[in-house]
View 1 (spheres, rainbow, N blue to C red):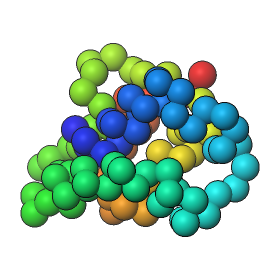
View 2 (spheres, rainbow, N blue to C red):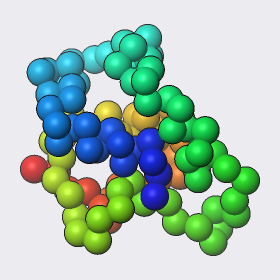
View 3 (cartoon, one colour):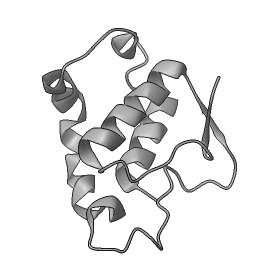
View 4 (cartoon, helix red, strand yellow):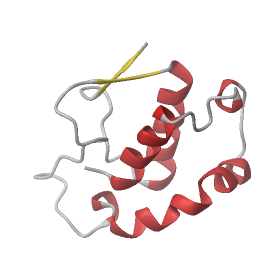
Length: 98
């Protein structure tokens, strides 16, 4: 499980970035401001560790069921996975767009 992506998903459930910030374009600087207090999780994220990704699947959350997010949240998570996690988290089997 990616602790970085999992934490952001949990923050979404608490209303994080649910005031329309993700409905328009945003800059890397804006994202850095929003997530600055979560960047410490990248230090322990398995996507950035020395593991053989041919044999390891990194999930976006720890639940056995599929979790619902909005289209804007899904796009934001994809952006974060590309920007920070080398595209090593696949959302398709773990999230659905409501």
